[in-house]
Length: 235
Image (cartoon, rainbow, N blue to C red; front, side, top):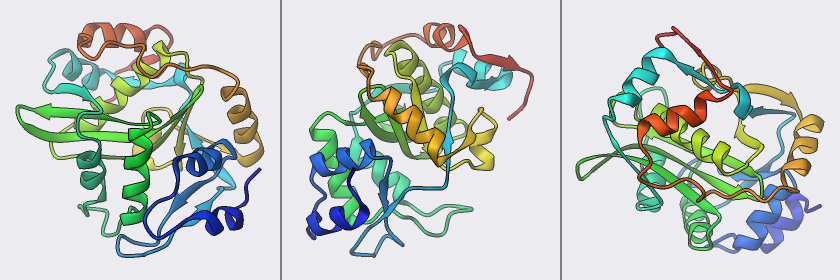
């Protein structure tokens, strides 16, 4: 198992090599920076980890209705860097970002290698929401999301869950449980439990591309609805 100090020795000023970054995720750790202008990263292995059990994903009734109306075009990996840059922007309630130039360059390289992905919401020619993360075997590690229009990031998350369920993934790592994420079923588990679930997920061959890009909203809802809870929450 790699340690943060081992990884620091191999990080240069421009990029964390994809193999090292994937090795870190396989060991249960991930990089962050203090702020966007920071030149370095530090490695995080939280005592409590936020995860979204795919069989307990909660899709509020209002959001289900919105997805049926298909307000956005969903694309996969067509604007990965732009999605990261949008996640890097400060917004109401977020005055700092942990995505610095080193992280940006590293994850773009990981996207080129086929292990980092973006789920994007488009309104015409405008990228209005989305998320990105890392896939490794049967685990997906969600990194960040953004919205420029109402519900865009929530819809991107729903499409991600559908894609992961269809692709045979067993772990959706959200890093930390937040009030925003908890409304969709994100829970906290202790480090030891997380590492056990991670080890099991790494034994599974997940397929991020098993779901067609042009899948209809009804098909996505059907995949999600097979085991997920639904309700009347207005979240």
